[in-house]
Picture 1 (cartoon, rainbow, N blue to C red):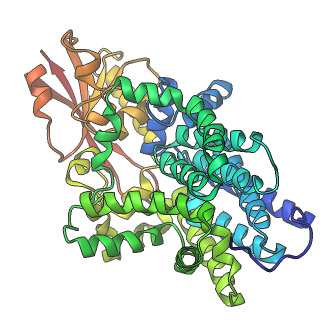
Picture 2: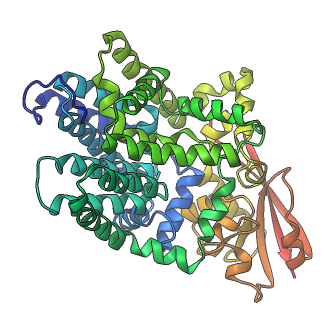
Picture 3: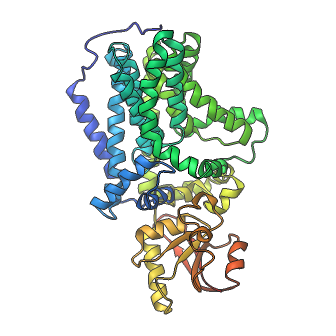
Length: 502
């Protein structure tokens, strides 16, 4: 079995100054997100956590529910668990590198490149399942390496618990855990493998049993309905899909870091250590299949698969300039985007002049363009701004026009009901329509029909299509207002508000 040769010092030695830097890293991220409003996906995760079920991301949503219960409507506190878990993940990646016999200097480079990559920085600053998936998966990988020096079943059981938690964070955790199961089957003596596999798989199954039950009871409805997510319609050629699949992680990590990771994958294939290789191949291979057959491509989906390869990516002889660039460009990418989300007006002029700004819509499937109506990278940055004021304007408009405030609000565009549910001052029901992903959460027909209320409110971004399914329910509609979501430095976005009647 392949072993790294550059072993120096205690595997747990860390200069105290690095703990100071980790603290500064944590506080900087907290400051950057402290007064940033919830983005549309964050609002979905928050709303789902308040209506908790086991069909998706049960572990992250349970933690979000607890955070909101402790400090309601405090965005910084809602994001605090993700920020702390990002710092924990950095420590775990360092320990994994040391456990796999990488020397202290290269382990610190590897940890720094991980912590400062845009993928880690963003997903562990804002609400995202990856911020919970990554520490769970790194714990499973650490336990897997620990089995080499710790006899008995306990370590395999702990590995199964950590792997099961990873699956409870995100569906893709199943690919990662499957890789560890294959490693046990293919790398252990015949007389031991089934006993060890059972010690690993049984705790993993127990932990994931709520998710398994939820999926079986709904015939895997939600995973099927996510099949349009990140589908790029313009890529019909398999070769163009393959190229974009390989290059898409550049949106989340620097080209220097991506080069190191692909180099690590190449070396893992050439001199295989199945404990390192199989989780990576199961994850990358599964999403490559989705990319080639469905055109679903998103770089952060495959990046968890590279975590087992992370020590190997930095173990080879590497020039110092390449390590510096991997860290420095990752930090630059992270800071630029983080500052842009906190102060979106800084990039507004650049976005208007840039031809790249309009390429955003090319990364969104035709179905999702109606559900996620942002048409440029500048608008994507501004999705985290202006919702509080917009919601208050909405409430004020209802009072001014003597419209019954608790009337339910419906929209085809999920950013509207979920963010307004978070910032709203009046208790009301919020619904989506024509978005089957939310059938069991907020779908209007599934939740209310056929006993529809006599009147309701409907909100939509100006210029987008009216849903015919709503016309069938409410044949009469009256526009009561057009409100603008505004924020300094962001282009105003107009929304039409209708009252619909049966």
